[in-house]
Length: 203
Image 1 (cartoon, rainbow, N blue to C red):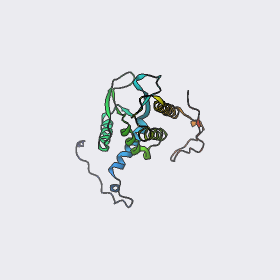
Image 2 (image 1 turned 60 degrees about the vertical axis):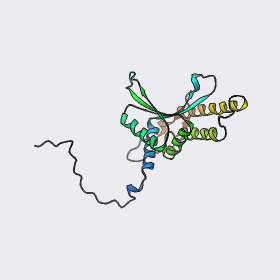
Image 3 (image 1 turned 90 degrees about the horizontal axis):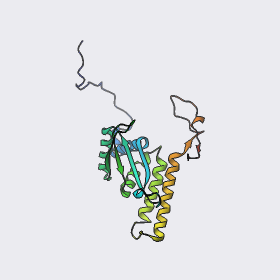
Image 4 (image 1 turned 120 degrees about the vertical axis):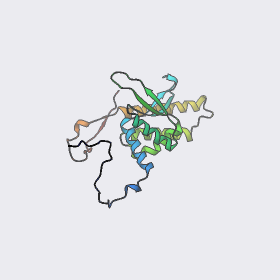
């Protein structure tokens, strides 16, 4: 018996034409946005970090990150971000038991984060609330409270209050608990979330 060559182009049967909406009518940009939203939902992180590592200033930096050990996933993320004109950084992650070495894509510029969130927000599920909260903060920050003339005094105090509210809001969203034990078992159908309740966030 002849062993098939795995490198040969396989022959596919001729399929009937689809009578539904043509796949070609879905734009590449929309497909990329939906794919990227799925990656952020499952592998991404929308969060704040302490500025200069000082926890006493109530001053934070906004970040959207995706970490993964698969370079092909990271490559596609960077391609989509480049096509959208979104600035980003890629850093290697050293292997630390039990984790493998990987890569992290970081978007930290306010305008870049805003463009990214506006692109993926319609497609997000798990991180929709976090993205919406950060997007609203950045809109306020850029449009109503620009950095100019914000080196001290009342304007800086207002800025720190908003940073702290964003930080605490994201923290609560990430740590909220769901009453998953109340959900019924299921199969071959959408999960029924009618009895799902959010409990108090973890401390």
